Image (cartoon, rainbow, N blue to C red):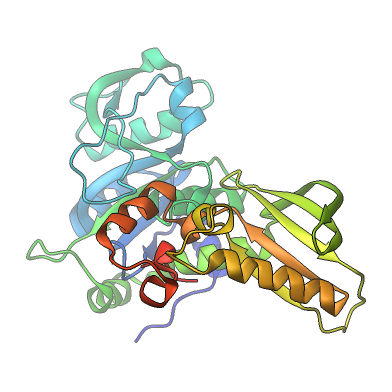
Length: 331
């Protein structure tokens, strides 16, 4: 199996105008795309994508850029994915092009989409190039190829835009990892993964901000409550801190996912409220510790989906329905 290249190697190849193959998760599309920075989109590069990758050539861009050029999004219908590809209306560059489909014309359109002097009137709708609207949170919000090329462009310090094309086999099937390794070896390309990019961003970026804090009297004593806001999803989270400690101390910590029905309403469908109460009591009895309260109802499935799950369940107690509010969602 061919080893994946490092982030530094991927950025070096991209900034030098080379393609990089980027793969996503096996549980998602499980596909590999050819990546190219938008500013490196020569006619020869476009021709290579069309000839060898064989997929749809698209141009991921930030939403702000698409809004500047008045390129509207297309509404997704009947998609099996919860995060479908965010297509916009297709475009062609209006000047110095012919039908818009040649490698030269497509290159001109890509470069115009990223040029600071381009205006909405410079593009014909519909056309032969397909801009994609990237999620503003990047791969941390949507782990797709669209977001990955934007994140990579920003890490490279260039205009946040790229060109992506799915890699297909000669028989028309989608290329999976064994096929992608052969493709990479044949064309002397490196393979990088979206998972690597996600890991890099999680390690190097500040993803949560301390917003407010105050003393909070509780039935067990006074704690320090600290409010945090997520930089990606704008989620509001909290921590209850009791006592003090120093580096090297063992600290009692409870991480609790929000459960409105159990925490506030005393639901017998789960034991979340009991766990929360027990954790607070233990922390206060210990004299120090922290309770981290994550505002992700049912570990992210949401209140409405949890209520729907109640309808499908039978029995009342947590022995039968233990943590069903979090069913199907990993900790």
